[in-house]
Length: 215
Image (cartoon, rainbow, N blue to C red; front, side, top):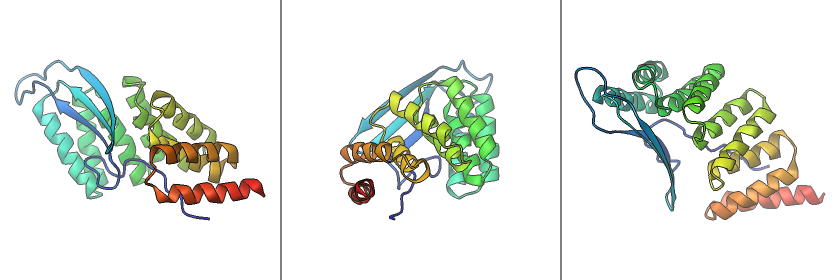
């Protein structure tokens, strides 16, 4: 059986491996005095390079600097320090979902699945239509052995963004390797291949699965 790797954000800033980013852009920042009023707007863009999900917010510039510093720490796998900074950002930019998504990923990478799930659920309270949060939540539930909950999370991500191929691949893997739901796995591998035709592994996975279905 060929290796299937789940698709999600490996670290929290700019990623060479996966063409997906979650970030926020400062609008009208201030470095001193009271923090400006916070407003957020999320844009989901899908182009030839992949998905970019940008969240714009009116926040203080020092919060943005902390966020970028946290990204660098997490890219270096300095999870304790990166998480500490992200917690400060999440507190100062209280209406923003991106820091909570990043906290969820960071906690998951450091092995604290429960805190990761709680952070992602908080992100979804702030932005219930964020497919990345649902995808990352699905991966953490899968790691906890909560397979049906993981499935529901991936399906919600795809309901919000049907061409979100990261969630499509993860659902296929879940159905294939953990739920033994071969029709679900095959349908989603095929849909994934249609969205990402250059992934040569997909054709091998589909052939392998069809062989197992026919037996």
